[in-house]
Length: 144
Image (cartoon, rainbow, N blue to C red; front, side, top):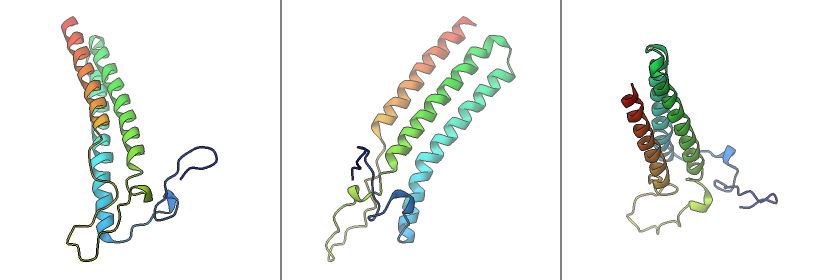
């Protein structure tokens, strides 16, 4: 649904996103699985990357500060990727993506929102960040 200011708003069972409530336990389980997969995965990666940065900045001497700063930059890019993925997944249960109801005599499984797929562009983005960081890390190690 488009608004007068040109922004696109998604509705969930005809209501705004903030008023979304789950219908049954199966839908709640599906929501929690998606949150565990995306939110918790990115959060764990960011916390571990920042922990590695603190290790290099606090434990080692000045020669290793570049490596600690590199890990902080990686964490910043991962925060950006997590934000973009979260924004994308907010639409997964919207009315726009809700499939047509299956016939009553069908034996198909229930479909929740959009298909559960990994966002390929996020995977490519994070892969490029980490490959670039590995190259820079290799150069830093050779300079030591």
